Image (cartoon, rainbow, N blue to C red; front, side, top):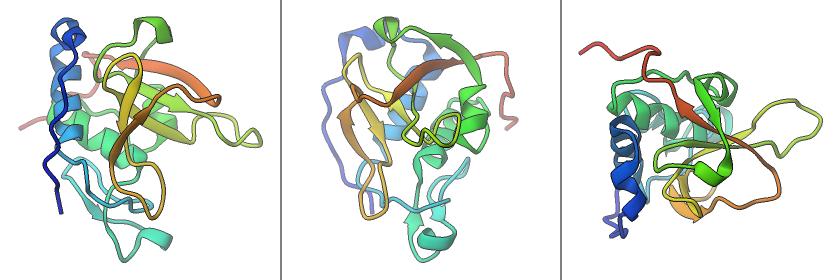
Length: 158
């Protein structure tokens, strides 16, 4: 269930890396797909586990994994793996396609959520159970950091 959404492509996308632009485009194509806990991955939407077992879609890391696989880069399955998948960059220099991480559980170290930056103010992500892949503000108090996936890491073999 994909919905066509017209998004004004940010001018800064021209400066973004080719892989970041491809990953972002892939994520944007998934707007409207349901959130599924544990769902999705390199091959696209999939049935999740637990709360997501009956829903075909993506969780946040599944969407990011799919998007970067479309760009030919393997970034890992979990937010923890993805947090380590590239170079950390300052939020002030975020580029389209950069991975934006959030730490909303202070009892567990590391990120619990990831989205793909659309520009310096917005991201596309799979937010939570009951929601659809969508665009939201990336400015949240639990922002942990931004990662630009390393082009030399785990390219997908065709």
